[in-house]
Image 1 (cartoon, rainbow, N blue to C red):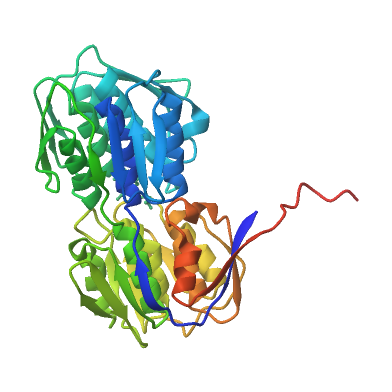
Image 2: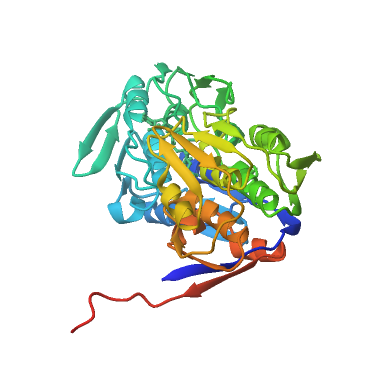
Length: 427
Ligand code: EPZ
């Protein structure tokens, strides 16, 4: 089993370049199905979630070719099935974008239910509502979601809940429907805008992405395109917190500062210094950090995917800080892992109440999900001694070359492979 060994206590200094956005890539790559043509996508992050999506595209009959480390050519001219089995979809959430893409192209999709980080219940009722509004029937058959439509007809869809996945999925399904689809109470995240821009580059007619009303004029067909994915807001935020928490001084390159506003604002409230450039942010800090109160919200609010990382730096602030989770039912599995490292943090309903401590203590901990894993890395970087982090496959789903990037900033992090202890030892 692979683990990270991190010997912390060093300030991060230097420069790091942010990769393409995971949550844009895992929607844009399935969307190539809609083109029935050849697409070249640049700034694709080298992460396991992307590899899973590319495997699914090959299963569907697409040919996939990396032109360089971050540019992939997808030939979707000879797809030959609309069925995706469980073994390809079980370990990530975003496999569900194939529902919308395949339905939008072929009028029928049968895809196993998705996996993904465990935040409690992760319903799909808003996806279903959107598909049904444009004329599809949606059934769960043997753990597979079967969605089909004789004809997709544009319609109005009002989402009861702001949902990134449902907004993207209904956009994918309706882009070639007959007539106009209007999504209301739509999610506004940067990756929603990126998907809409990608689809428009293939000949779609989508307006209003980035606002809570998105209008999609159905078109007859889409064509191939060349497109570059936006930088990853959450990877950038994660390195901002790591730089600040270690009292470092780091230039974070290939960012869109506008996307970082809510994260920058909260870090500046804690006393972190942030210098903004066109496509970069310089983050530096020294203790003491002021306490902070955060409530995670849909964009442009403070992103839920930065919750665990911010809890780590709040542990090192003076006084009592709070992080209230406003998106997921339960995003607190990181708390017990941080407590192993000496954090004074309690969960009261949807709020983590954090009392500042002097420093973390090195301890063997686990990554319980993608962003919780990133939080454990930051905590380990902040404390003397050697911290072991298990289950790092969670982290590698969403952070390209994390140990290489951290080493280039002066961190002492190694990935080791430890043989699994199989079963009980015979007496
Ligand atoms: C996306 O998940 C991201 N994943 C998540 O990031 C992120 O936390 C989340 O959006 C919120 O920003 C990807 O983009 C692959 P939602 P998604 O639908 O689409 C409820 C990461 O770390 N809801 O916006 O699954 C849901 O229960 C990952 O990169 C319904 O009620 O999230 C939640 O409370 C973790 N019914 C809220 O909406 C539905 O049909 C937001 O969920 C769908 C969602």
